[in-house]
Image 1 (cartoon, chains in turn cyan, brown):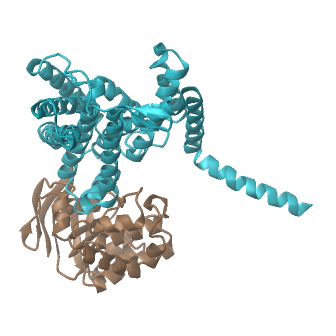
Image 2 (cartoon, helix red, strand yellow):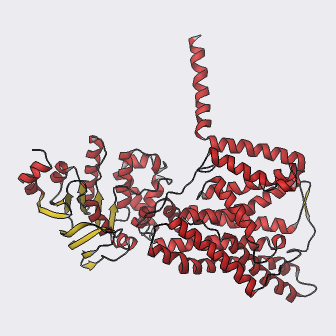
Image 3 (tube, rainbow over the protein chains, first blue to last red):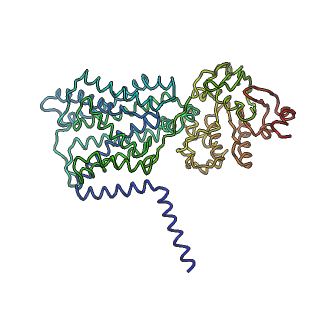
Amino acid sequence: MAKETLAAPAMETSLMTRIKDNLPVVLVSVFSLFLVVIVGIKGGPAQILNTIIAGGMWALLAVGLALVFGVMNIPHFAHGESFMVGAYVAYFVFTPLVESMGETPNAMLRALVPFVGILAAGLVGAILGIIIERLIFAPLRKRTRSGWVMNAFLLTVGISFVMTNGATLTIGPNFRGIPKYWDIEPIEFLGARLSADRLGAFFVAMVTIGVLWFFLRRTRTGRAVRAVSQDETGAQLVGINLNFIQTLTFSLSTATAAIAGAALLFMFQAYPTVGLKPLYFAWYVVMLVGLGNIAGAIVGGFIVALLQTATQLFFTITWETVIPTVVMIIVLLLAPSGLFGSEVKGIQEQ
Amino acid sequence: MLELKNLDAGYDFLQVLWGISLQVEKGEFVALVGPNGAGKSTTLRSISGLLKPKGGKILFNGKDISTLPAHTISRMGISYVSEDLNLFTDMSVRENLILGAYAVKDKELQLETLAYIFELFPRLAERHNQLAGTMSGGERKMLAIARGMMSKPQLMLVDEPSLGLQPNLVHDVFTALLKLRQQGVTILLVEQNVNTTLEITDRAYILEQGRIVMEGPSREVKENDHVRNAYLGI
């Protein structure tokens, strides 16, 4: 009798303690699973697939933001403008190229044209990031670190202001859009009809995230980026050039956001303030999963998309922004460091 | 190899070091001891490039490194094992060590050095996949020292490695330092544990209130009355 009572509690504590230790992850997984089920039941596979596709996009946007906050400790509120730049570049590359191909273009080449625009957007985004970082944040870092968070934040607000108004002044406030990237019929998949453009955007998002992941996890420089986000001083002491890593990181964030903007040209179009919604979505994800948590940002993108879809299916459109915001408030009240914990260590005052 | 000439250093308006001069020759094991707040860490931070001097010069192999950034000084062959350790807490032991050899371009050489370090520090080898932030204090100090060695430095600056460690771990740490010494690494050791430090080092400098008040072979410094009184409790 004594033996029986001893054996049972031992097994329970092991499972219970494991659940307790990883409580946030467990709760989130259970809740997400619940959302997947109800979305699947009410909306069918089409909605699930659309959610996955949207999730990929938010993940891509959020990762860049998480990188900038985690590595450079900058609350970046001009991230949406990188998205805008990408959209414009894609438009101004794609449209003339397609026109030059005439009425009956070579099918192979025509299929590749959108990717040319997207790649161009990534390139321009990267260069833009280098210029902004060198001109604006590097000098600030050199001058002073006191009040860094507020100063950096205000600078990004200024950058956003200059860029949106600059676009309005030079290119004009009109919407530049395209009806479709690929002029083919929607593809049947698991009982859902998915537009080729959406699939293409998802593909781009996954490839970009995959490349970024590989870079951060497996390359020497990627490892250095992670090192800087964890301990700036330690990074210097092993010979890592902080300025170089900061510029690289910012450039990565602008490039990835630009790629997102380009890939979604068919959906959002290009106009000066197109970056506003993506900015808020990216910040939503980052705040929810924990500031600076890069891996979490990827998962978070999908969770937020899931939440969005569930809200759209079960509530009217008026609740679309309210419900997710309420969810975030509750989460942050219970877990201030975000769902998966914050990786931000704070910066050195010099 | 290393020479400090009349170094003035401090933080903002607070001057901590007043005209410090000291030398470390190649192959030497030199101690910098003194009470809390004397400026020992400030000295090492200045040499490593984390802190810019307010006056004076720091020369490494004859070259003035006073104004160079920390990462450049690290690549020149000076490894600083700080008091805070500055480990990458969310990375494994192995990744921390690989990063220690960040400046080493040859990947094979990196792996060779890693294998060698694992031989020297078997406890680290056992835990090579463990996250640095989850290790005990003593193990983290070992990791910090091991990481400092990965770049095969000419000079190692070690800041209070025995601080907060239980006695048997202190012994391990000092043994590790002596092993380094045998490999031909020049070491400048900052410590509050004056007794053991004076036993294992060649020469010593006593730093009090930002000034060098005594220097000489460790043997002699140990016999000095002031030192015996103030630091050895005799």
